[in-house]
Each structure stands twice: as structure tokens, then as C-alpha cells.
Image 1 (cartoon, rainbow, N blue to C red):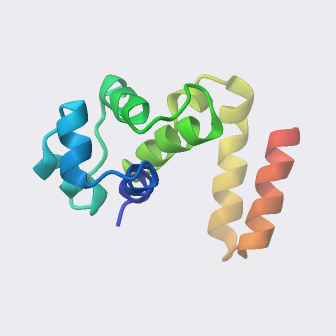
Image 2 (cartoon, helix red, strand yellow; image 1 turned 180 degrees about the vertical axis):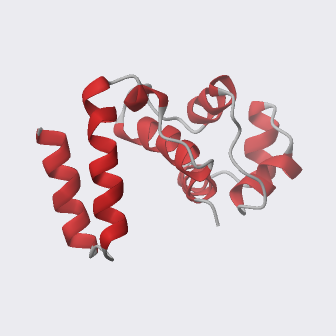
Length: 121
């Protein structure tokens, strides 16, 4: 299942809404939304639609939850988020990250440490 779909479903359920209630309230197609939640179709490519989903889910623009939703959408599509790709310093470090990840299986705690090092650099 796609992470994007799991996040969308978690936030919808957190709002206490059934799928049909949520879609009716916000004008989404229940069939398409159900397929997204179940990971049967990838997240939308359009930023506008993801913003509509995030707003309907009650996420605050720019919050960690908002960014996580956009990051999950990009990851599920096999993309690096555009804001990261626009940062030359981050792009310069991506090959090192890719080589590190390919070189060996990285334990979850080591990956968390690597992420923190990248954030601090």
C-alpha cells in the first residue's frame, strides 16, 4: 500500500468521517478516493489536488503533517520533492546518500542518524 494512501486514510479517520461523508462534504469521488486510500492508484501529480486533500483533511499549510503528505506523494511516485530538488546543496549530496543506501542494508536507527546528519549539514 502506498504511504500517501495510508496517511490520507489516517487523517480522514482522525476527523471521524466515513469515506462517503468525507467525499460528500468536500466534493471528492468516493470510488477514486477509496482507491487512493487502499493504494490501488498512485497519488495525484497535481499539487493543487494534493493541497485540496490536505486542506479537506484539516492539515495546516506548512505543518509537518502537511509536508509529510506531499513528501509521501512524491516518494510514492518515485520522485524527490521539488523543494529539495531546488536546493543545490541538497542535490549535490544526493549521490552520496544513494551510494550509502545501496552499499549495504541500512538499519532503521542508522538511517535516522543519517537523515539527522544531512539536516544539520
